[in-house]
Amino acid sequence: MTRPPVRTAPSGAVYFSLLGPLTARLDGHELPLGPRKQRLVLATLLSRPNTPVPVEVLTDAVWPDDPPRTARKNLQVYVSAARTLLGPAGHEGRDRVVHGCGGYLLRIAEGELDTLRFGSLARAGRAAAGRGDLAGAARLLREALDLWEGPPLNDLRDSAGVAEEAGRLEARCLTVYEDWAETEIELGRPAVAVDGLRDLVERHPLRERLRAAWMNSLHQSGRQAEALAVYDDYRQLMARELGLEPSPAMAALYRSMLGRGREARRPAPAREAVGPAAPPACTAAFTGRPGELRDLLEVLGCGEERVVVVSGPAGAGKSALALRAAHLLADRFPDGRVRVRVRREDGTARNRAELLAELGRLCGVAGNAASPGNTASPEGGAGGDRAATAALADAWQEWQARHRALVVLDDVPDEASVRGLLSRSGKCSVLITARGQLAGLAPVHRVALPALADGEALELLGKLIGAGRLRADPGAALRIVRACGGLPLAVEVSGMRLAVLRHLPLAEYADRLDDPSAALDELVAGDMSVRHRIASGWQDLADGDRWVLGRLAGLAEDGGFTLDRATEALGCGERAAIRAVESLIDAGAVTSPAGEVTAHAALYEVPRLLGLYAQEREGV
Image 1 (cartoon, rainbow, N blue to C red):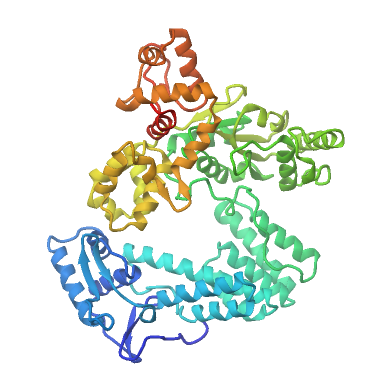
Image 2 (cartoon, rainbow, N blue to C red):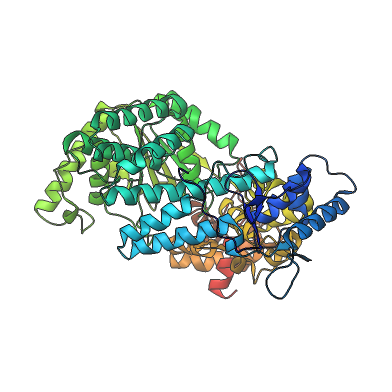
């Protein structure tokens, strides 16, 4: 942003720029781009180069509220003008803009569009850094940044569709700037990044990585007082705007600057404390759950209950709800809010010694009482290891007795995993998320998460694929969220998949999800897989419960099952069927009516996707 942009278009070719105002240049001369609506169409096509852009997306960008009846004809006129401006593509003279079933596709080369060139340079810079060539990485990243002239498409951001694309481009630019600044700091050249980082922090004051790089560049330049002031300003801003403390990573960087000269380089990876560095399990913005959220805020806010359990199947959004509540309860817990996952990445339970050690590190409790090496067995090993674990447990109870904090114990597999962690006295509260009901914990306040209502699920889907695309085929959108069973994770993965497959009609994707044999195969987006998450919950079930669930899943396909039908399907007596169904309710695999009703009158349900997985595994 501090040097003249580098233009790489070959002679005689039009060069387009989105990293600033929309411009087109031919041999150094700027070209007129026509009226505003024509520029909006061009900007939308250029934002998705070499990718089909649906007509609905273009329409929403130009007429977000009330498109005229002639919208499609008008778009054809604007696209025709773009073809004239662009000219033929390559030596074969192919059309630049072609229309197919997925929409309009604009063919353009890397040397003709700044965002393509930017991405290529950024990838090359990161690859160089991965090889240890920091000097080469800094040069390539700087070359990419030289293309960035200001907020992308800043002259067209009054269009919501274009503003969304511009926001994505700006986020990419900021990330590359952070990569470059951190590389320069590693090379011992922090001063070159100071001024640019200051300007960007002023525009993006809550972007933590930018602020950390600014602190580091000041500190490495010998300006320690200014670096510490940057942290203090951030701490006050976070408290004022969000009611949060800086993440543990930022706090650790600040402490390192206080105590160790110029050793600080970049913040260590943040632990999972409640705050901006700890995203919820689902990556989409929090959606829905107004009643459950209000319940959590009332119960935890007034201090009536010290332990609350949020339960629901894998992918129901338990972690997202818990973290949302924790963020909103900042003023009720002045001594902090901290989150610890109770399972390892492979889904197995962490032992008590591990959990106590992490809680101790996060809260500053008895930091030397035990070491990570003393956490191999469920009770920390024999002899001295057991004594160390007991010392940590006592220190943790003492800390809770003297503080008012909120502890989020996330993804708890069973009661035994957390019994020794709950406060016996004092004003600390514990918010537990679990797939099962954890019936053995008492007294606790319970919040069960049902499937999202249709409106909530559609809102979540719309945030990911765009309101215009949702409005284009609302019936198909409703089929999608219902095929997902209202499971937030499945709706989110569907939205992420459709956001990439812009050519795929919603109706066709809904057909795929309606097919029981293909639904789980469709619910994959990158490294997010609904099948994988459901499989994790399946492993929690006892062998007998898995067989029962496989038998009952077939009954649930038409909307639920009664106890009489369960008894018949299981081939057992009534009492045995009741125990089998209630065991699955306790495990969170079967839902039952919220109000009181006799076992015979109740209609039980198996969540659709869990039922499909159960039938698949049990061969029903």
